[in-house]
Length: 311
View 1: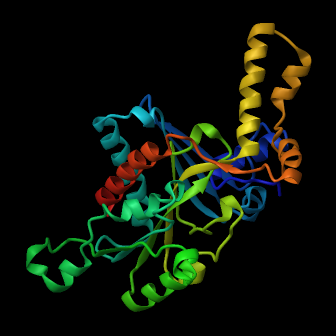
View 2: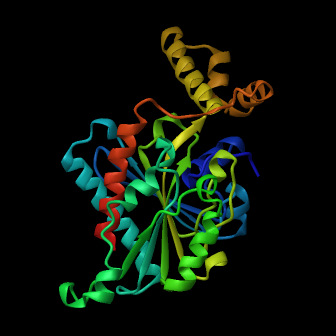
């Protein structure tokens, strides 16, 4: 399997095709694209067999990627449109696994005190929870309302408890029919930081994108369907250098019109060579943009609204 450092399924299949010089689709992977409007694009990747799993290192299932342009200057109408897009795709996945009134537990992973890792806790603050109302004050809520509970369990460094252990305990005591997990992800493109949302029905391995892998959270480990909703907020410095190199080559190509060496350099993925050069001196850092506060705030609003609309 090709060495990926990204949580996004569509990036993984693109990188695999580039690394293996494939023009056709990958056996075991179906891809569908849909342009919602000039700012919102949806890519659906479905892994259907073991060959697809082995090719890009993701389990069989559905992966929906929503790309949103101009998120830094997005207005209220665009936030609402993006939220509705998230809601439609999320509801479609939820409906495949449970009935309309089945209880859902929403878990926001991450550290609220570290901005690039704070999406989960921030979203949880805006989730409309109903479990307690249905249980104690049913007369004040629609009889068709779904039971929704939400929790942000913190991180191992502050709790001393593995996140998976906390979730397992809650699931065992409250018996939800489906778990929805929110987390920050890693990407292989600087253009996708806090501009992309991935929804997958295969669960999640927290920390995998930044090399800090924790215990898997999935139907296999919990016994109930797990949908993961994630937003990339960091890249490796090797990714940033590789992307900047591509942009630099494009500029030289535009000015020079043609150059066989530059054309060849642009066609190949230089990530591995750059990473090898950075690793010995421990320069391969995980990086995030200076506007990450605003980006996370906008994206948390989109995600929270989308979830509330869907559930």
